[in-house]
Structures are given as C-alpha cells and as structure tokens.
Image (spheres, rainbow, N blue to C red):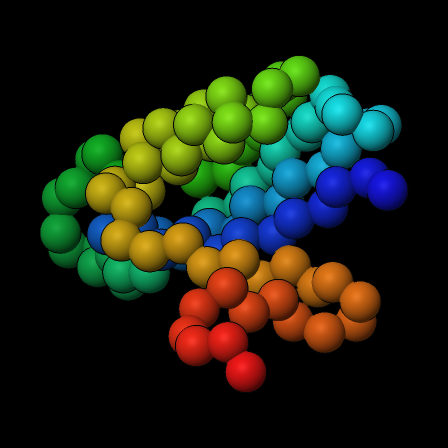
Length: 103
C-alpha cells in the first residue's frame, strides 16, 4: 500500500499543509506544501522580507526521513520557526490520533 500522509504545520508567520505521497512500495517519496500567512500585513508597514516570500514548495527523495528534514528546513525558511506539527492524515476513513492516552 502506498504511503499518503498529510500534516498541518504552524510556524511563527504562516500555516502550512504538507502532503507526502509514495510513488511505489518503499519510495520514492514526493512532498508538496502550501503556506498561508497568519499575520495580516498592513500597507503602511514597510516589511520587504516576509511579504515577498513564496510560501509554497515541493521536494522529492528516495529516503522518507531525508525528505521530511528537507521540508521542515524549507518551511522554516519560508514561514519562520516551527511551533507545532499535527498529523491530519486519514486512515481507514477515520482521522489519525497520535496523541493522548490509549483507549
């Protein structure tokens, strides 16, 4: 079964959705992420840095862990420090829960 994972990543300046898919059993893997700025930019504030950055991106690798590290680095460069990551993948038609006590 091919891997299909979706993560919500919050950074200091943006919110990203990261989707990772597997082309075949064991790779290669492809990641695509889309970012949305969380802070409203005011037209009278001169901040040439954040407003001009492209938040979207993609990467591929045969190693899943290397791909994740690459995406985290690129997302941090575009959106600032990573504050939180949540796995929002759907498995068997139910949201995945990686947190809390087992029941």
